[in-house]
Length: 391
Image (cartoon, rainbow, N blue to C red; front, side):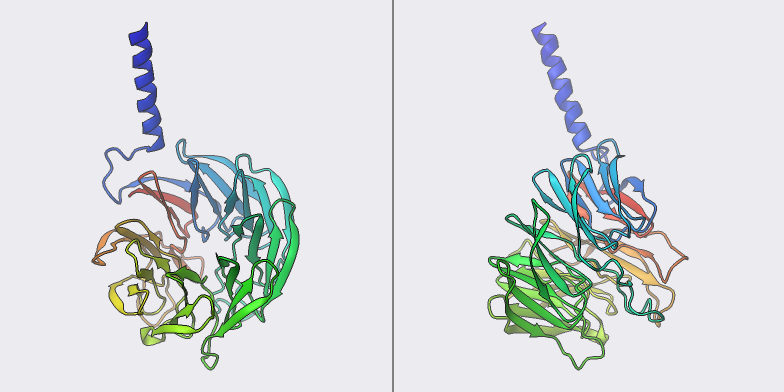
């Protein structure tokens, strides 16, 4: 009986191990494993926690997908498209929707705990009528947590600090134009960018401005769209004035900058490398992926990309992952793509070609920052599907 019980225990362990890493035992790097379909494009970044993938879709739902069974656990309906990335606190999650609300849910069941109006539910995406799609208004500010407070931006230009337990506004800070980027927190400061061309450092406890930095306001488009990143005591952020800026995080003084070739916008959000003193970031029109020395701003290498890369690279010890989008209406050929890049050499390890979409200005691709978990790469695609690959 003891031998039989021991055999059952060993079998249970093996089965558990299998289901934690489904279909990866014999898969090669970059092999497609499975997909999950939604009813709209996926712009939001993917988060994987406790064997569940969380992400939003333009069909108006936030999804929770069990990555073992590959089935839907739950989905939460909102009154607008969901391009927000959820933030987590214990058994709760928080996200925003284009209906103007910040939602708090039970992460296990999807039950709504509370919601609060951020005031931008009536804000038209892509700018004034007749200007779309040239404003490229694709992003959405997502909540970040520090202690018991949530920090999130609104298209009204306000930055909100909200009690995460009660859903009550603690303070607001006002910029002069839309805040589409997600805030970044370091110590007692919360950093945010705005379409008004400024980066703001705000005391996260009282909402008072500590410093601000202006991009090149003489440029025809000086909007900050990407989120600020804190890397090696610097704020790293790109702007549509074609500059990548590195600022002292305490004072806002410029430490270095880099000018992208060809007048390319810089909409990608920087990610710190696993190697100290390095950072990675992509580009729009220059169609390249960059590795920089974060201390000096020296360019270490570039790798060509197929299209516009507006997302945030995902980084592991030796590999970078980034997607790109494309359009048929452009002066040079660009195409959709998703690549895994060797972080040391810049060589492309593997890639996949997203589906062509003929029903919108952006004809497909990947904006979403993928999640890397359990030996798998979870990618949100504008074809409306979560695609999963072997790492």
